[in-house]
Length: 302
Image 1 (cartoon, rainbow, N blue to C red):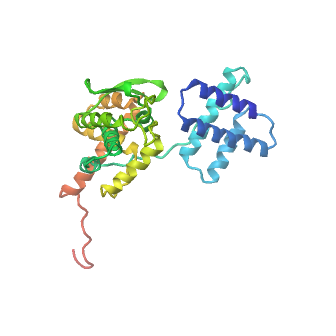
Image 2: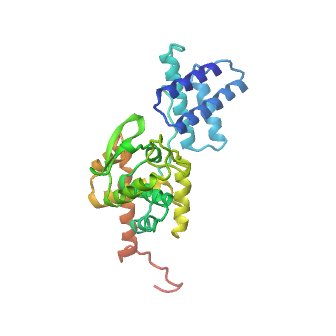
Image 3: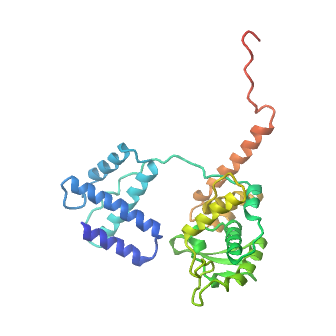
């Protein structure tokens, strides 16, 4: 069982179609199932749906949320598809299983004024210009964190005002870069020569001249929000949400937002229509005279 799991993870790694986070999640979830099978006295992967259902049910009873259980089932399905395609099993017991329904949670919002406060500073050092440039690019082009740190110098075309992005599933897309981001990036490219090692191709580098990590971007954004006096926690995906919601509020073009975000399905992008409506509803509640709750009258008054 362990050898089959290792072979599956090796095949995923060689395929280069999954992020390190996805691979780590697959390893963690399938190792958990393997340990559970051992406690059940099984020396082979389940061949019927019932044991997998029981494993998921025990996870639910232990307090795991629907998102975690859905991720576990996704990992098991992918593993069994590998076993079937490689001829190690003839039947996939997970085909009829359904993932638990997940609660619909809207992502956090950040308004344009707060976004402007985050971006506006007075950079002086190369690292400060790097931080300004990457923040501007995140908001200008709606990039995922993995897409940002994966950019090379050759992916950026400041003359055309575009950046070439490798998204999920190895899908390439061209995304426009706004004027403010182009200005900050131009200054950063000049400052970058003071930091980057000669052989480094990454657009954004750290103080050692090597490619900047995603964790470093998360830390610098959180630190920047505190420095700029923002009460809200800021992370890279929040700027992607800001890009989508602010663009949709201005243009109303859901298809364009879908293309710019690199979503394969329009249904994924439609969450931003809910965010837009939520924003409008909050304004309605504040402004419309008939939207205000009536205060209860004192006892005895009609």
